[in-house]
Length: 542
Ligand code: DMJ
Image 1 (cartoon, rainbow, N blue to C red):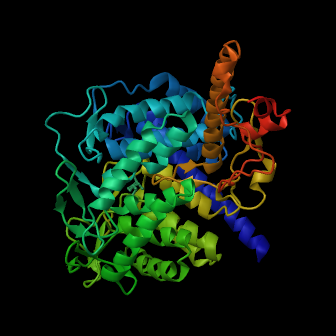
Image 2: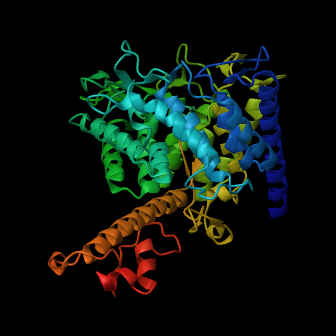
């Protein structure tokens, strides 16, 4: 039985790879450098910007599938061809999760791809600089009285004076993973600070019963759309509170989520479905399941709420079986699709949850969903030129669009579902075998803390964040020491009176003194401790 499972897992992995290359090669042949492939007309179009979005989004999937040479080729192609200095109005949210997230993840995986790395990697590198460049273009959107960002920014000119101040909740609260990663890798705190400011401002706007709505005026702080739920417009805000808490070991974020979760369970959950309710009254406004909500069981499993995750997954899987895909909206009382929301744009969320739940339970139900998804997509959405969004699951009409998340997320999660020993799942042996240079002269066990996927399925490595923060801290300490030394040198040349004051506090650890260990630890000591070991040079003389 074991042998059979291995054989079929291998052939499933091959089928998923063929699916990827059918779409990917067609994008390169027919659509690059446009953002997206149009799979019915076999050409390309710009959608979310004008930055070869599909290629950026698909870059780390190449490595996930084991294609190091193509990963390296595309990484350098993107450096040569993509320019963010363009007069384009771009979504702050989409640019962050797809472009910044995609480049950050590729940067962090470059070591594993066997690419030549510059000496400061992972705290510097060309893909990191590209990610930073793109993220800087988004910063003007955060310059608002509340710190909550506008939804759209012009990459060249900043926020248009006529820009609407109404942003969806996810558009305010889905930055902490990418922005904290950027800050901690580069040492520039600006990104993490703006993301946190936005999160705190949003937190303060919750209703008396602890819920947030769907769209908010980021200047007046008034809720413009007051439907509270876990789907479209809100979803990744909750996801980032949980994943941000895990990646940054941050209790503030976790507590925010847990308080929301109490209200969500209380007001929106019925028979393990999640409905939409009025954020102030808690009364049901839409008894609808949205396909975007299917990330929730995966998130619950990350929090350890397995029973509830499994039951909710079963509800959503029953909808998949009914239609061979998840319609954008599904009316729970009617048990059918909602008018004008019958499409399935090849979204990843149910497969994503299946991956987490298979990892947590080992139950083959989740592999079955993976097989169902593979079959459906091949049968309904495949065209000679790629895979097309399904316009209507009832009659299988297609749309001339292949969203970049199909290669970034849907295929990646499918592949990872069928490869439970993949390095991205982390766990156990991973840290041992992967010593890699980190920071100048320092070593970090990259990957040792597992990986956190951003909401576009781009894996981020918490160990790299920790190691680069420490590297920055080391440099600051060294700078302070040198300043102290030069002051000390000057003072010692002055008459004795000047040197009689209290000794400046040593930066070295005192004998027996311990630093509180950080939640993730790298196998080297802080710079100050290393100095103190090297003959207590500074502590003895001060
Ligand atoms: C992706 O861009 C992201 O997963 C986002 O959080 C939600 N929408 C799509 C996938 O459905």
